[in-house]
Image (cartoon, rainbow, N blue to C red; front, top):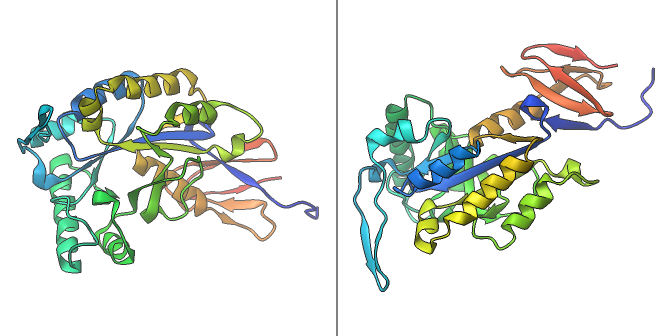
Length: 286
């Protein structure tokens, strides 16, 4: 039968979920311990971006309001603390990618990756730009080093999927005054539901300790847990892998045959119907 209308496929995440939520936190300070107590309590998942050159560092800052502890977690803590989450790179010594030479940035990147992989026993494939600084040179070096995505500090205030994973912009920072408004909008089902695919929050755990604002992240996690029946709670790399596999689906000219070259099952919704395409298989859609 001749097709008379354009095809429109909607990504469906694992478990039949149509939305995804993730966190991204930088620097690996000791305040990650408290953050993870909260995050794990509500089943929220995310990515923690570490500077391996700073692990085990004792760093107490003196300021006008007294001392503040910015010490980093210990090397021995990395595996037990971040179990169930992703450990990603943040540069060996948190050097700005745009303020050092290419060879120095390559060293910062590769050495951090190698150290974290030895510590975790897992491939490190994600990254967060120190200070949020990046350019085309930095992106190229990350590709050469084996990174697949990199988070910036820019925000979108929307829930769209990233176009360029090496310029991955979050929805908002956790200090954004619109944080809970965004969470409520994301979880609400309405006529704009198909544009609500990814809610991404970033920050530093020490900010909660500095501002005594731990209730802020607890409120967010609790809300997402209580209203997230249609939300996939995932790490950054899990989201990257799934979206990339979805985008790599291969279609026949008429669009009725779909081949999945990835190693994981991908689901789509077309015309209100749910279809699953197993890995390395072709599915024919009527």
